[in-house]
Image 1: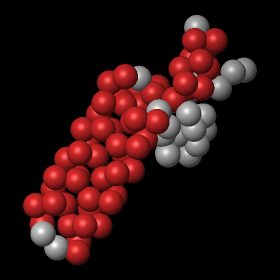
Image 2: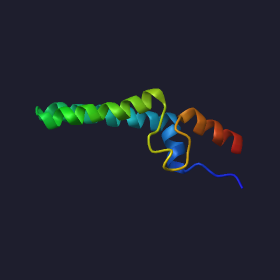
Image 3: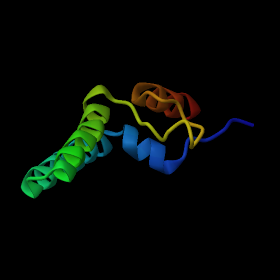
Length: 82
């Protein structure tokens, strides 16, 4: 029996999921910038993580969901299962 990739992992590997991560990261950066504090700087640095995940096509929580780390592997796995 082949393991099916979760719907969440498939969405995050899609173009829409990648753009969502980029936009969420940008929102965190702008929010942190508006704080003008040390906490704001930390929020800005944290915002870089989803931007990098969207740009470089990886999902940090995919291994927890038993899905491949790289988005292209998730998409290839789903194409092979279809």
